[in-house]
Length: 136
Image (cartoon, rainbow, N blue to C red; front, side, top):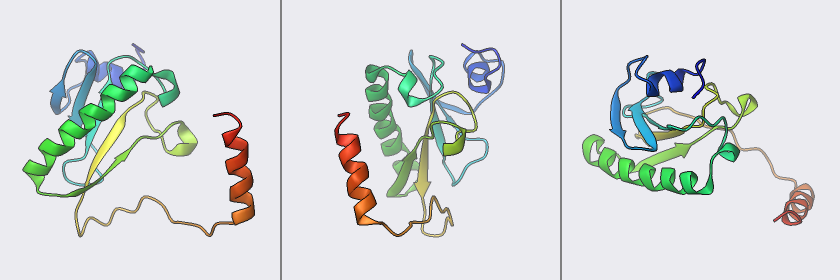
């Protein structure tokens, strides 16, 4: 735990939250600044800043839990489409330095825009793909 981390404080019950699920590894709660109605955060109880800091086991478990929560949310909110988002680092939009997963229901009139696509340069894309393949 990190005593300066808002999510660690929530996990320690120092700050209230709208918990919807909790087990030995994770807490799921409603986001206090939701992108859409029903926006949920899943937070590991182990303090980790980014995805790279979590074990493969925890990463697998968090996606299985996300699926379970999304299926329950669909029944409550009536949506069919959703985003699962997580940001790694400040430049990627991470505002709390504790790994977390966003579950964002999508509605036909929600006006949420996640990014603007850019034109691809095939020669650059192929070079990048080749470079990455070397490390896999």
